[in-house]
Amino acid sequence: MGGQASIAAVKGFRDVLPNESRLWRQLEATAAEVFAHHDFHPLALPLLERAELFARTLGEGTDVVEKEMYTFEDRDGTMLTLRPEATASAVRAYLDSGLGAQGQAARFWYTGPMFRRERPQKGRYRQFHQIGVEAFGQAEPIVDAEILIMLMHLLARLEVREATLHLGSLGDATCRPGYREQLAAFARDRLEALCGDCHRRLVNNPLRLLDCKVPSCRAAMQGAPVMLDHLCDDCAAHFAAVRALLDGEGVAYALAPRLVRGLDYYNRTAFEITAAGLGAQDAVAGGGRYDGLVAQLGGPDVPAFGFAIGVERLALAAGLTIEPPAPQMAILPLVAEAAGAALSIAVRLRAGGITVLLEPPGRSLKALLRNANRRQARAALLLGGDELAAGRGTVRDLVRGVDHRLALPLDAGASELVRWVREHEEGESAG
Ligand code: AMP
Image (spheres, rainbow, N blue to C red):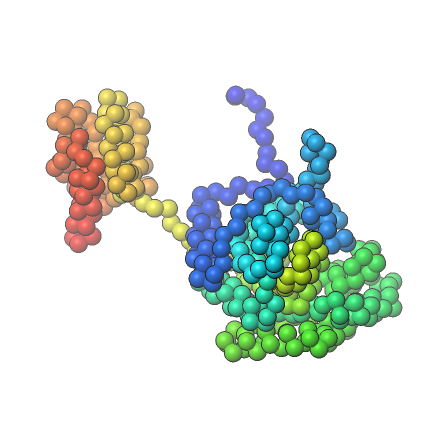
């Protein structure tokens, strides 16, 4: 293998090394617990879907569909897409499972990688991960409030700093078309000030005019009409009820009159959560209501509400670090013949739930001890020629630096060995 060129990872695809990975597991475990308390149930979805699933749901004219999907032809000619998000898949699964047929209520959560060919930067990758929630069959404002409260509670538990809920409403099929027309008319009066992308947005998806990051576009769109001023009576009442429920629970939020979500299928409640420590890409989660999506995918008229948290960003924003577990016992064979006894004791201790660092033989005692100390092992079992001959190991207490002969024979049963390690540790902490 020597002398060959190394192979780089694909741009925008990254490895999640153990320190970060360990934190991710904690984030997911806490999320799973919080979701379970809120009657959400795990759903595992495929990474590949038919391309049309996303083309039909996310909206023509959205960045994701226009330029960010990884779509390819399978060997049988089917067009497939690596999922850019999981809501469309969740709806498909809800319908495929038969739950959707009667518009039954169903509450799911999922986690896993998503793929979007965006321009990579800090907090933005081409493969990234989300933890998400989808609730089907519930249109009432209490559901919006319940889920927002759950999400804010989860972020608080994960010690996310300055988590801020930005809350808006996108109206529905009654009020949005008229608003969209007013917004487009406002933009048409300022055409020369708008960038090329905004010219396209004006034709394809005028709401996205509010989302442009170009400073001259932002300036030109100052004072544009906002959806919140154009909600129909039903949407206004729904939004007021969501707000009243949040207020009643003392959940703070910032009104976001210009909030537009990246994907088209949202209606009514829409939100984003920002947090400190993320730089330019400061949205850690986003979501809202998508009452028309199930019908759009061929199902009955079933309302739905969901959100997704970006795991990479959550890991940056969460105020936690998870230390690797320190080995309770390092097993250090000092001679080649000790390999069998070393492995056998490691197997017995690990079966009893003890965290063991098992070293191969062949290095000096000094090198082995240095490594055991670096790994913060609490004790080391030394297995040299003397110990093998006597059938008893020597245990060195690495916290206090004293040796004792292991009172048990090397072939002692697992439970006896485990008890000995535990008692030894208890004595240590007591002393
Ligand atoms: P979205 O599915 O676009 O509503 O995004 C929901 C959340 O996923 C965002 O708030 C981000 O935290 C995260 N996210 C979206 N796109 C990316 C990306 N390309 N890289 C990393 N995180 C992302």
